[in-house]
Image (cartoon, rainbow, N blue to C red; front, side, top):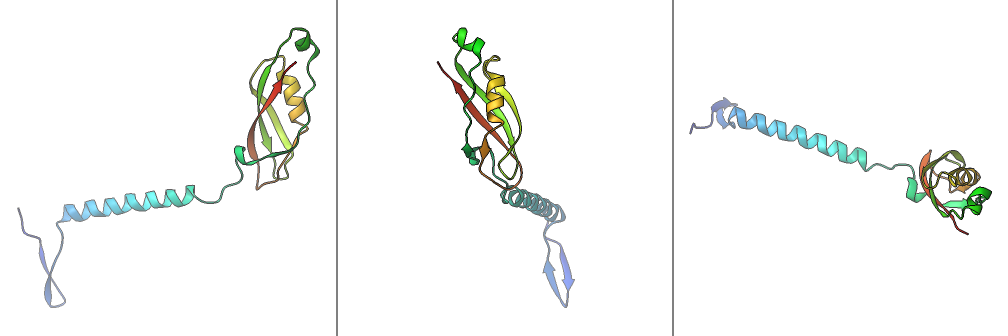
Length: 130
């Protein structure tokens, strides 16, 4: 092994690390600073997310007549975009029976949610039963 490089500095010798060790330390510090920056960015205050927006006013869905006759029941998941005031901007069906989905979307468009900071995406379930 080689000895550390001896370099005079202000009247006396100072030991420096080997150049490749110094480079790897700098790379480690760069990676560490990026990880720290990403941690700070992802833990900053964010607007309310789907699970955090409670519905204040729920309008019950109108059961489609054809679905009643066919004894179709089930749950429809609706993805709702809510503005800062709690009003519904957009609603679309995510899963569930295709005959029940339009009635669920129409009902959810009349719902009101808790106000929050900015827009939020909320997933709600609308149950249909006879």
